[in-house]
Length: 313
Image (cartoon, rainbow, N blue to C red; front, top):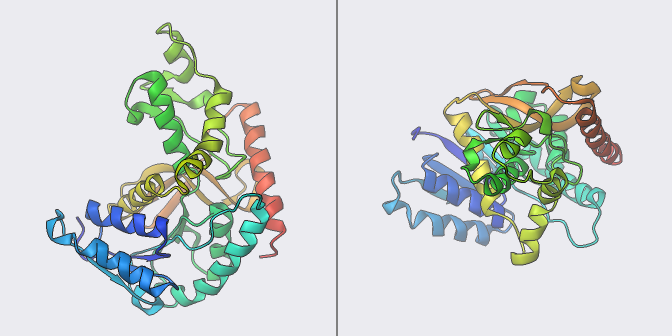
């Protein structure tokens, strides 16, 4: 554990509180601050987590507070915003959540200008874009979790077909964290073998690319249908991003960030492989993809740009 690490979490709903709990249990911070307009909810969540601190490997001080209490945070995590309702368009969701973020950003940045900002709120690519546009923060400091969750879901699903650990599945999801996310199958591997050849060389049926992509697009919706919300997987993914930043791990992850010419895109946030470390996003890599895969990525980006343009940020 890095003693002295302070992490503030904006939003103490199901996602924010799950993130706080995961960070506390993993011993990633010495102090966690929960900020929410519902002050009793934030106070209750902080108290519930703190009461278990004495039997954690690394005790942590978990408090509720206001924006001023985020001062000197090393990491600020955004989980604010409403969940998408049945029949609600992505544009409608974006408008509502962008409005929330616009009111919050100035209040936080003045207290924690040097923090790394980890964006979980949906639509995550648009919220990441909004924060970058209105905060004045350097681009490296704002990290959208983007398609990292999609990638985790994909690797878990593939591992069940391949009968290996998800850690041995090297396959990513890029583009929008949403309905147009794409998978570059041509550069995916299991161990060191190409994705399709891994199965064919063992006499196994190659999993349908289409079915696996549908799984990625619908995984969150399936959980929501069964239990009403998703928060465990995203909390683990968010804690992992914090861990990489804290330990300057230089991990290459599919994160959402502002693009500058990659595949012809400017002024839009999308997920591509990013080197993440103590300074935040240190570089963006352009992966090798087939012409068909590039076309899918471009389609995803254009879809997102259309929504962003409708917001007039």
